[in-house]
Amino acid sequence: MRLWLSGPRIGWFRPGISIGPEDIRRRLPSWRRDEYREALKAYAAKHGQPITNAQANHDIDRAVALGELDAAGPMLHIKGSRQEIIEAVMQTSEKFGTPVTRAEAERLTDKAIRDPWPRRVFWEILAVLAALLVIVAMASH
Image (tube, rainbow, N blue to C red):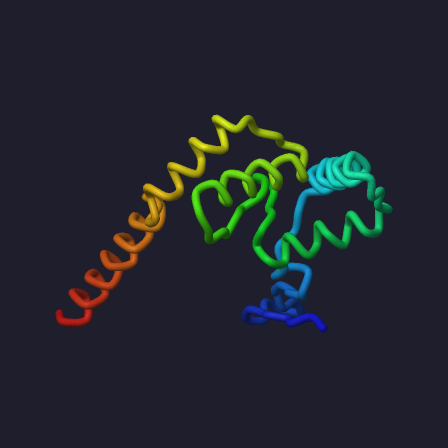
């Protein structure tokens, strides 16, 4: 089902936009999906469990839906000890075709542990607070 959002009528025409589930769901560019599929198939074959394209596509769709994968690469949401996180970073990066060394995995883990509130989130919160202050100031005049 698609939702039609339309503007005011201009003569015989009513401009608008149609929005459906495929516009809201997260998607990967086709070239990135192909890269991930080949990497998953190679990883599975290396571990003695070859998979088909359909199984690889299913795994990719599941990872995207769960927020574990996007066009920039894997995004890990892991709780555990430092060693468990390092192992998960190495395994996941190998699985999706971007293997990292143990030193790089340790660096990424230490950065994630040290910085629980990324700077981007801080600036987004600050921008929202500034917008709210502007709205309150405008409303009080």
